[in-house]
Image (cartoon, rainbow, N blue to C red):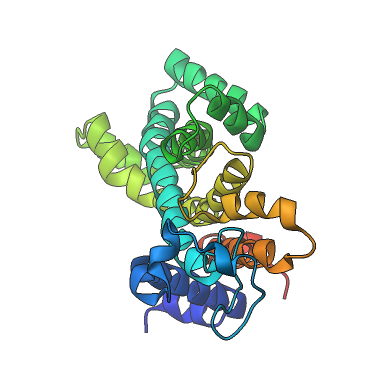
Length: 280
């Protein structure tokens, strides 16, 4: 077995996180076939509204009589799609900027890092809410707002790694044999700087799901009748505490998914930098 996989397999919290992430991915991929009532994404059945959990409806029904279990399963695809898109766009923007700022130096580096510091100075949720308010409420607007607030995290990490690697002996050797900046940065420095980027991306997937749920809860994300965990919790407010199941199960879906990504990210971080290893 690969040494890295062997070390990861000994980390029980990381393996639990990996198991949760794999299950959520499978649910997102095969949701329409796993949901007992896939048509409940947009249908309404007023005669069975607000039914408590039962054998027919394991998670109960919502205010329109739709099966909450089916909508939680179908909502997994949207949650993962948002998080993967946001983290992917943030990496495409933040990683190149970090490489340029870390290797180039001078006024280019100062400009990039000062803009990064300004964005990082504002809490991501607050900035995402402000940007989402300026756009039409939709999933696309939520993804754009989250992407515009998440790229500085990757820029800061890659900048620090690039500065550290730029003074390495192998980079000096590459310069000595006439290698150009593009080759040095993208073929040699970037592969060596990917480990902390992967860790940040893994943790960021869970955090993005949480922030996207907050935007959905505030009406700045998905719109009805799209199955969305945050939107489901927002719709349940008028029926609490009598219909406790309405908010409980979408909330548990958010909690378990975010916990899975965080546990897996912590395990990967321990492998990348043993100095940050959690106390057992």
